[in-house]
Image (cartoon, rainbow, N blue to C red; front, side, top):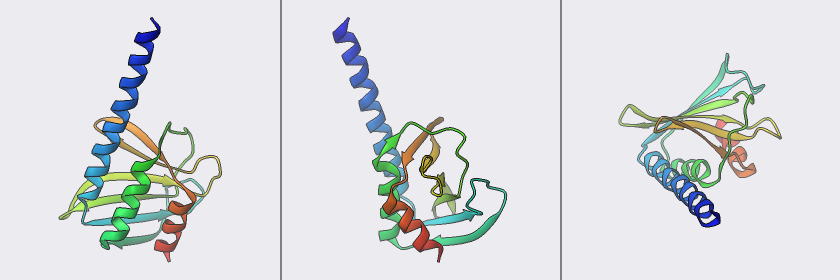
Amino acid sequence: MRAAIIIIIAIAFLSCKHNNKQLKERLTMADSIAINYFKGDGTMDTVVTVKIIRDKNTLELLSNFISSDIIKEKPNCGFDGSLHFFKTDMVLQDIYFRMNSDHCNQFTYSYNKERGAANLSADAKKLLLKLKQ
């Protein structure tokens, strides 16, 4: 019985890592990102700034932040903005972020018909704020 539980946990862990790897591969295919910044209070009814990013190093940094620290999604957090990864004018992936709440800082997304979340670190927040200027 104990061995079966360990095997189930190992499979779940490996499948998360596999999905994480697939998400990373998808994000790194992007040639640009459109970032929508909302009001910053968790509601998404007002876009206050839009930035288009084409710099490959910045694209890679954002991809790394989103795919590195997968977490359980924190519910009812709202959003401070969205990232839309593009490849030749087609959307590859939409990702939402919350960065103005100490207990809710996260990226959220749907991938392969499943919801996912990643930690939005202090460095990721710093980059998103820098890009907004």
